[in-house]
Length: 135
Length: 401
Ligand code: SF4
Ligand code: SF4
Image (cartoon, rainbow over all chains, first blue to last red; front, side):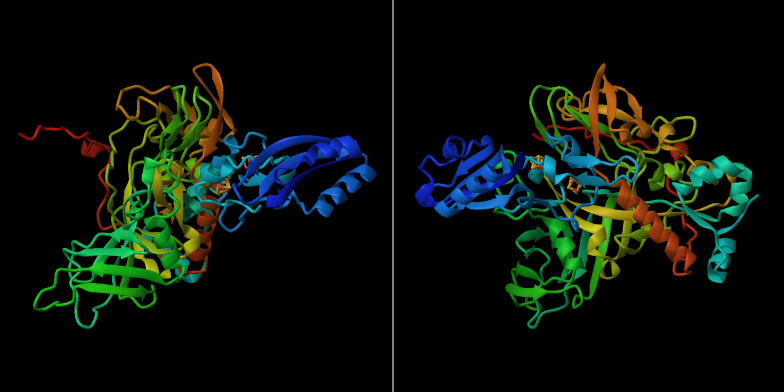
């Protein structure tokens, strides 16, 4: 079993096609949509949790890539700029998943990328604008 | 046991001064007791790194050829308006100033991505800043328009001058209403969804010298990564508030006006800051050394988070409408544990000021003193203390006929 969170970018020509449902139909993968948006006349962006047997998972990803979908790992999407972050901790009560946590011993804020669902709530809430989105 | 600042400075010069941070002193006093610790320790360093809205810089840009008189005209630094009601080429930029075309809260909540605080950070970092100015022209200052890049290394003076910094304690902000609110204390979730506070607690300068026995006008400090001085009591200085037995106030009390040469400061310690729905500001790093002249001063520096209390205030109604009443008091130990209880509900807490950076400031200042690079100064005058009777007034509005 493999379970990952990925960012899919769909070129304009694919935006209106049923693609993600095929991941379940042909590759027996389970998906959970975390976020989706379409920029008019441009591209579609989808953030998914995707899981299944490793072989099927790889086949599914290949299928997407062959169609022209750009596949990126979610952890490359939301990034904390470590030179801007002051470890104040304002973001910890804003993050809904506990991806930003204050270590009460060191008083530093940890960013657990594997818990981040790219909701982007921390971006405007961080007074230093240290949280960045790179999709 | 008593010491003088002159004696401590002699030790600094000889390299045998004993300096610890306001965090380290806690255990030392617990182990050795006040008397022995006061003998041994010469200086305790404090620190704070939080957003401070009454901050800004003044610069003298140098005279242009032909001359221009900005006084009475307009001046913008990277499109952010600066104040020019001074002599010909002196301008002041406050950190909350915003570009005229910023939508502010017309698109609610405003983002406030760029303002005076960000210009100050970039200027200190050595980046070129675009100055655009207009003037009305006089016989001696004929020019009416100026557009140029300016750089901190070329201007005559660049001075950070903050009329109010280093608040001695602050409120804990919560939201009792049923809608999300955007404040200078951060975004507050409805129905006591979170609680934000803003003080370094046991490391905060004025909580370690609660009665202003050593910190006064002329005290030399760490300011924005360089050296600065206390210029005056800050605006809204309110020394007569309610205090605990350890003399620390449990509501916002004393403040400091601080000044220093911006040219030797660092962008790392002066950060442009944005509060969604509220505005821009500057996060300022300040560290103040406290000379241990006697046991009372030492006892004050050994104060712990668990003995410093802050008041919980509702920012949906009580604060904006200036209504009386606090929702209770909590200690910084409770605040730093990550949750507090307000009206029977467990509320997660978050801090606006960085404790990790406050520790770094206190450590930096400690190193400067140990290395003999930073001597202490004797204040030239004291700040008004609780005995002054000075209080903080609200505006009495009078109708204009
Ligand atoms: S709010 Fe921003 S600066 Fe503060 S800890 Fe979070 S990411 Fe860092
Ligand atoms: S994007 Fe959302 S989930 Fe990720 S760290 Fe920010 S607030 Fe947390």
